[in-house]
Image (cartoon, rainbow, N blue to C red):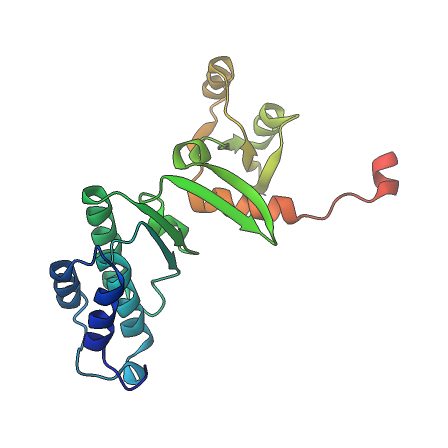
Amino acid sequence: PDEANARVAFRSAALFFPNWDQDLCERLIEDFQLPLKTTIKKLSRGQLSAVGVIIGLASRAEITFFDEPYLGLDAVARQIFYDRLLEDYTEHPRTILLSSHLIDEIANLIERVLVIDKGRILMDSSAEEARDQATNVVGDETAVEALVAGREILHRESLGRVASVTFLGQLSAEEEQKVEAAGLDLAPVPLQQLIVRLTQHQGAPAPETEGALR
């Protein structure tokens, strides 16, 4: 309720969650420096997020859904959340769904990646499998284009005679030797970049029928 404060919110939550950990709650209150006497309606956006984060972690529910829980939190507070989430999950394993647009920040936390774009599931795999889905190659444009010929390209950009291409799949040992001989550079694709490129690729307009028939 708007007229209640955070302390009332936590006491109420403790009544509903059988696994509630009050010691963890108190620790998180201190971590986030949350004012307990200020009414809910007067808390800032970040402080409201902290209330939700504290309830979400201290409840230790069997299934917890954090929907962009970092809204309004500064970089320090977000890192505190990630650290406490990982610590508590390690000690008390359970199912935690974390919805986020700050992909790079949570890349080391997640075990499974689910990407939904306009109602379509573009990716549903383990984090390890997701990171192995694409490769980036940089170097002489002619050599790069010869290497990626026939592959599904997620992104292509060039500057002068230097090209950078991100494509789906990995290279064989023989292809990696050719890459080294050609002086090209291979780099893993960060999870955030992969998701961005995959989303853009899936959203690209299909070629017109007339053009395809040609």
